[in-house]
Length: 311
Image (cartoon, rainbow, N blue to C red):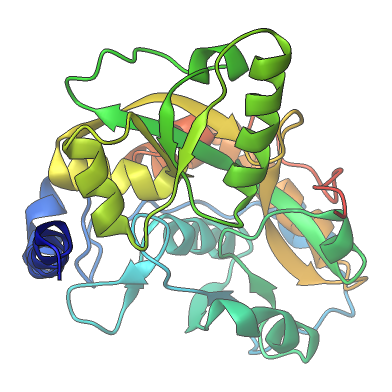
């Protein structure tokens, strides 16, 4: 076993232990308590309530039953009691329930299970960072509520100041997940750089997040690219990385995240009205700001907009 691999393994263990203790440490920026005393609530939206089809039957009368996948903070994670799901998506689901005059019923599910559960009627909607794609639109309806963004983050003392377009990334060593949408986009960016006579992007791959963060801090990489929300939380937790740009998941187009409902159920229109009501009265902005996700705000919610194409 090499010295590097031994050190790397020790770092991974240390990060895992530290992360367990830092859930409380991150409370200065993110409240992960189960009672959520500062949750932002909304008022009833009569227009949204009227838009619910008269023949639509909620899974439980008087409740808005929503599936959520607790994949990690700040979007959705188990709180400090290890039972209650908290985060930006649960807060947003709560505000939609308020708008419809209903009580929220959250159902934690594995990410892979939500399509079958929604189709079979186990819940009314999915609010779990689901991106709109043309393929998913064949089976589901969507009401958008956030931009789908990836984040460019660097060491806090990095000289890299801004990444907005391919030329800004030319020659940089960028950590990216293999087989991800980020990788697909950055490979195209690198091709554009080479075509323009610039250096290609040096994509780097690591086995896990801890190794990636170690590579960034040790200077073996310049930038890390992951879903924006994940890196926002890590930056607040570790306080040694900073954002220098964002990248749309649908680059060169925009890709949005949406409430997902059964195709043809008629509920999507009401949920879009509810979201636009939250945007108009400022509740929406307060929820995103509460979870440090203002960068992902939409100006307006849409029903079934153009999604990512089939590849």
